Length: 89
Image 1 (cartoon, rainbow, N blue to C red):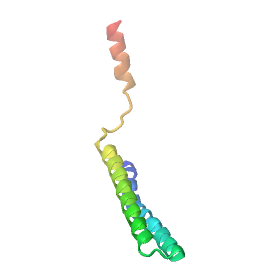
Image 2: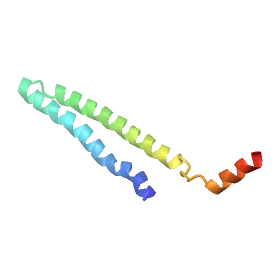
Image 3: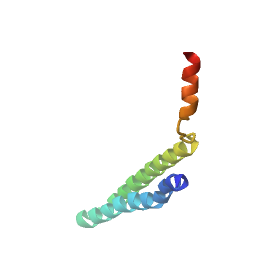
Image 4: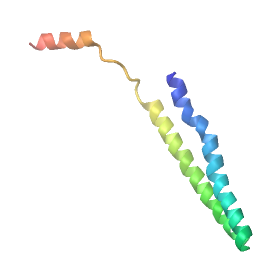
């Protein structure tokens, strides 16, 4: 189950890149058609989308690498803790 939690963000990667690139590009296209400024706003939208996609990709990659590099969480051994406390007393 832990492996699935680690792979989950990587599965989001495609959607993040697609949506963060296509939405600003589409907005640029619509604004170019409305104001007749083609291809200026389309290029601006594409540039904004590429930057947003890059930031999203880096954020997901860093978060995933942090999760992989973290040591596994273990439950404290209660028997060992009580023995240690008895020795100190």
